[in-house]
Image (cartoon, rainbow, N blue to C red; front, side, top):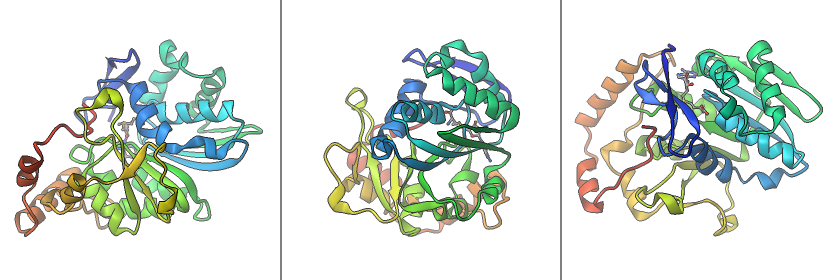
Length: 301
Ligand SMILES: C[S@@+](CC[C@H](N)C(=O)[O-])C[C@H]1O[C@@H](n2cnc3c(N)ncnc32)[C@H](O)[C@@H]1O
């Protein structure tokens, strides 16, 4: 599974490239920037100042998303119950050796990461953190069903490279763990992922592109099960889908990834979907692209 190459991204922060998955862990524009814009900012963490929250970080990797979360919660004295899922220990081993990564955060983050690496666990007065190593499709079952999350970060490799973590069946398990006001946040703006989340009964929102990134039409997706739409304020970093994004969900790109018994191979999931797309009457995604003079969407590499 490992075989990782170090990558220096444009904002000066380090990341990795997986030879196995043939994809970078982060956008080349910046690993730190990606975490902040696509995960930390949409989390709206000020809501939890002095309060407690439950967070699930799916695909912990080097730990940018959890580190940035912990860093903010340390400052605002929140109480956190964190679960993280990850199949490979090597990225965390790399983070703990990389001084420039560790310098980005409060010293306590290093202490927590060391404990997660050695004992898969950390606990003090404010934080309780567990790292469950293995295939997220299996390990998610270990989390007590009574634990519902205020935030779920979904940061797998892209659906084309790692479809196992974007299927109806896996996303259904994930969304069962979201509390009614909780946010599921992902960098992906894939039509298949968005349509699946909507079909699972969630309201979906687009993460607005940042000022520096005008060429992107979205920086990802926030899905919420019972969102009071009157609470959508202009200062939130996410908003309703544009007409262009809604039309994307009417194309063949919205055909979901399926993994009935949660143990299919990447090839089977991709090939079954291609077959379903071939026989579908939905609109062609190329026509949609032509209509909207398509620009790049959010990808890792
Ligand atoms: C895009 S990277 C995650 C980046 C990460 N959030 C970070 O801050 O560095 C995807 C991660 O998913 C992990 N992964 C791939 N397949 C997995 C699976 N089936 N279950 C759990 N983790 C998986 C990879 O080992 C990799 O660390």
